[in-house]
Image (cartoon, rainbow, N blue to C red; front, side, top):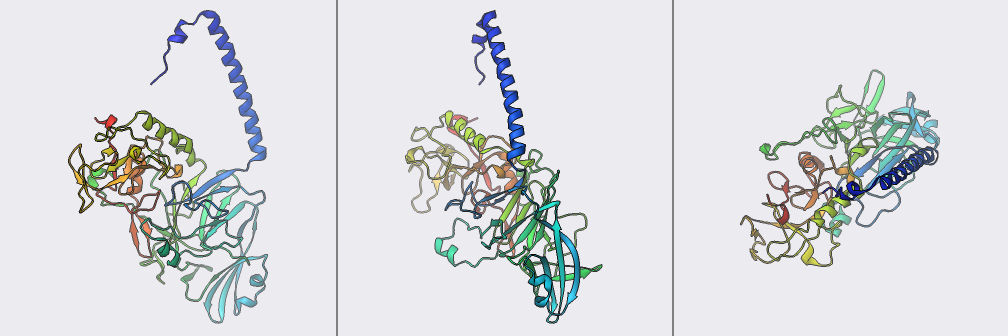
Length: 458
């Protein structure tokens, strides 16, 4: 829908010259503004390494963002480096009596081999890296506090009584302070005394004079196949959702990459994966056993839509004034769930066919609550449509013309195909595909449906 060129064509020479002068001044002003902003940013704003986003939340926590407890954590370059690197290791009989453990200014890891023997690994400051820690604990060493992600079918009592499987000090990420800002993940985080303890029952091993181990429920990672954005290979319809990308690996305390264990807390470690590393790529998934995080690099986020762009997409869809074919009323796609006061404007999607309509009683089976679509007569459930508003979950900037089944969160085709092809760890021994915006397990052959609006029928 381009703008009319009539006004420009009819303009006389003088007005064109004036416009050219005005445009030149504008470009000079914009150029100067950009230079000032660039200089201002370098002086006043730290470098952004990337962000960690918890799957299952649509842009914010239901109870609101509070301090270090939020749905997304942005990792900035620190004003002063706080990274660490291995220094030395030695064997002791009583680790609690050693100077490294008692010194609260000394980072150290204690690997208990038996009641009377432990290996202590000391770490020294590293001016080249910044360290960030993730876990369930609210103690000060934890930068990003993460608790178990509830599924929508759980009641508040279920959530309160559920015992967490996320470690208090789950993992740590070390990021190089200089370009290309390489980020590496390690299992386990340091406590308030700057110690990590792996007990006698923890899985551990020694190889070539080095010691390493795994945490109780482990930290799993899955790197994307190729680029997360723009070049995503997705599962075609012909596979009917039967094949899932499930190349999950476990990362060790020292950053080694291993095949996952038979069960989450099994004592036997998996085989070492020699050709894979703990370096986070744009789109790497990190599972803490209770919550799954998505790592987005600052560079990768340039290829995902912004929140403003997502809102503009909704405005474009609403500008087409989609109608309910039964009530003949105009439907309005809300930016957030439960923001429409007038229920007759809320769009619903028939999950078996994708037709979008308003809420009405036509074709409703009072016994099963199934509904017959008046457009194609297919029978099945309906659900409210709502927009997926977390930009980091998008793998492209295309229009949100698809929705996840059964929750109704809208997203682009590549985005729904990508997430429906990913098997996310569930519990301590299972995997399932889920909507990234609400953590609802996906249903149906594909896990999503193409939306058919009344004004978009083709």
